[in-house]
Image (cartoon, rainbow, N blue to C red):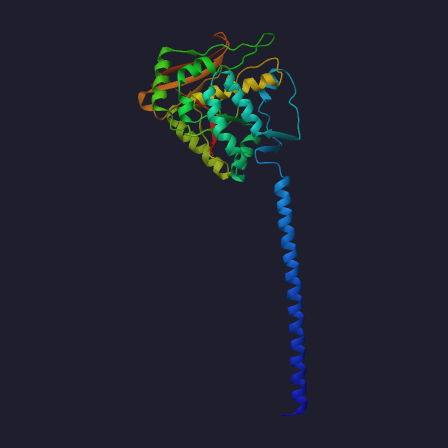
Length: 327
C-alpha cells in the first residue's frame, strides 16, 4: 500500500479520535451541567413548596361576590377587590361556632374531628374544584355527614337552623321554623330512610346563596333531565358535576349565610330564597308522592317555612344545585 495512503488514513484516525475525545469531554461537561441544573431545580421546588400558601388558603381574582344581592338590598355599591383570600380553616371554625350556638354540638364535633385533619392534606384537584365554584359566586359551608345531619331532623330544622332576618329599620329576628303536620310526618320518614344524596362523612358544600333557585319553573318530571343537561354543560367546561340541594343543606345555607352577613355589618338582611320556593325531590321518598317545599317569608312573622304536598298537584318546581367536595 502506498505510504501516502497510509499516512492519509492515519490522519483520518487521529482526527476522528480527536473529535471523539472532544465529544466525550463535552458530554462529561454537559452531564455535570445537567446534574447541577437538576439539583438547582429540586432546590427551587423545595423552596416553592415551602413558600406557597397552603391549599386550604385560597386566593381568588375576579370572584363573583356571593353577597351581591345583600349589598343591593342595602343600597350599597358592591366592593371591587382585586384579590379575595378565603381561609378554609378559618371558615371551618366560624361555621362550627354557628353550630355550637345552635346547640348542635354533634355537628361541631363531627366536622372538627374529621375535616381538621383532611384540610391539611387537601389535594390540588380538590382545591381546583373549590376555586372554580367560589369564582362563580358559591360559598363554602362545612357540613356533617349523613347520620349526624339527619339525627333529630325535624327538631334541628324547627329550633336550631333559624336564619337571621333584619327588615329595614328593624332589629334582627330569629324566628322558629313553621312546619305543617304533614311535613312533620314527611321529615320523620326522611330521617328514617335518609337521603342517598348526602355523603356519609363530613364534606364541604358549595352553593350560590342567591334569592332565586338555579333551575326554575320546570315540570317536576323534567327535574332529573334538567340536572343532567346542566352536568353536560359543566363537563364541557371541565367542572365538577352538580346535584340538587337537600332540605338540611338548604336550612344550613340560609343560617350560615345570614350569620356571615351579620358579621359584615349589614343593616338589612333577607335570607336567600326570600319569598321564593325551593323544592326538594328526595329519590328515597319519591314513591310516596310527597314533595317538600321550603321558603322564607316575612308574611308569616319572619319564619323559615316547610310544607309537604302531593307531587301530582305541583305543576313546576324550582331546585338549587350544589357541589359536594368529599375527602
